[in-house]
Image 1 (cartoon, one colour):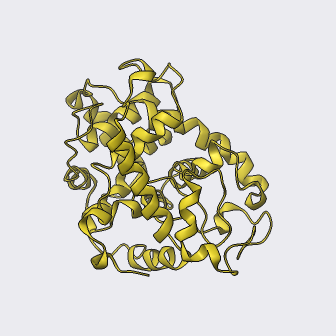
Image 2: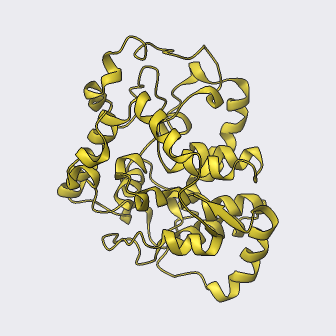
Length: 295
């Protein structure tokens, strides 16, 4: 496995911005109209060809280098949470260092994106822990600020250690992944047992697993499924990997599917009024989370 320093700058950051991945999702999974209030769904980010090329290159890198060994290495590197510790509001400021000048859907910063998601959830009367999921679900993107390449932070997630599903976007790129020809990993079940449950399956590395691990002692299980699997589109949108699921996963799928539209379709050019909202979110965070977060 190549280390990050051996990748070229273009290989580390193939996308113009992290949002290019999310905009590609909008093209694949057009919106139910009720949440996309800013403009008609079909007008969300209609890419020109060069931008689509960057998404293809992003997935080529993601599918080539996200091996089982790579995932294990990143889990060892990051899940000790010994990089940084800060109050949660400072953590949002830290996240906002991810400047995105290229997203035509909005001029808002990362925190405003998260507020829009959480406010859409709150408007629809969902439990307060789900509102907090909306606020926190992209916090794991701070991995970029620790030097991780984009393809190890965002992108559709998938199981490693077993055969890749053809329901994953650009499945042809897996042919360059060393695990593709490794008999330990390239069978239907690979290193797993039939219907072992997703909790026993290692997913490709990125912001989903990172924020799940950060939040797992603080939120209910339904919330944790939303965080851990919100980018696992081959499962919650395409129905793949049934052979690895157990009955508990099937029961929890409804929560992941409930969250997904809020994740994809809540962008709006009007920023939420933070002065009005701050007391609510301050109390919400105090209810569920410690004063400081470890990264």
